Length: 347
Image (cartoon, rainbow, N blue to C red):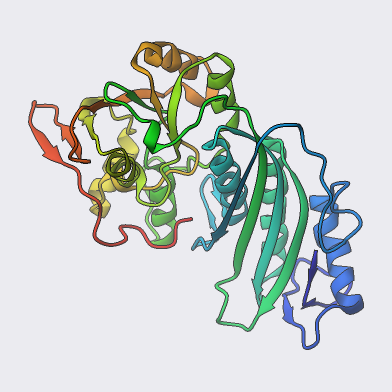
């Protein structure tokens, strides 16, 4: 985990990150050995080399990379470290892959409390254990005060593909059922509530969590999955619009089937948000062959992390590439892509 970080040694919880004018050296190594290695330790990371040599199972590899700029850094149900790990392993899962390894890049702002860094690192380590992945390489840099917003994280993930058939929007077919693995909108609302200093009668926690085990269970059961996608930025509505446009088919959502908790529905009403457009960080959408839809839904609901899974939409044989919503009273309206960002800086 090379970098350019200089701090007082030994470090205390009240210390802050300082900008290094030359980088590296004893202070940098002390910080890595005191703060990063004890929390993120793995056999591949231990040598502190510039890269990692990895053992991988036979087969095709999935590879993804992502940056995380969450503000605020901490929120109910997680923090930027939790989102960074789960966001990346979930992207691998959407490829039908079993996540194996992650890299971790930290960009720290001068003046960041060491206590905050420790808290984020602990979340990274905990999330990696839950997702069954190892941090195998990384990098640390510091930017001047006022130019980094505390912490930015960049992660890259590698996994081995377990899906035996291709997954993607081009595989979606008319008649496919669209399942969502749990309630929607919790992550975006949790972040927005903290950012705006809002308090609700019942606190709303982020849904941030790894989804690979659920995906691998569907694959192991032989469920015919055509497309997988996690509804992060832009939520369910934006994700379905992207898939419908690529597939050149229509996706019709059933409003009464959408799994939205009363707390999230109420918060969205107060904040002027539509839950369909609010990001999730621990949910996925699955386009499933109609013959397998009931079995897939039952399998998801049998798991603790999928008890609120629902069948929310069907793919219709239209070349319009639209997403529509059939309301509770039987009307139909178009669900458009947003022209701008509904929620800034949530992942």
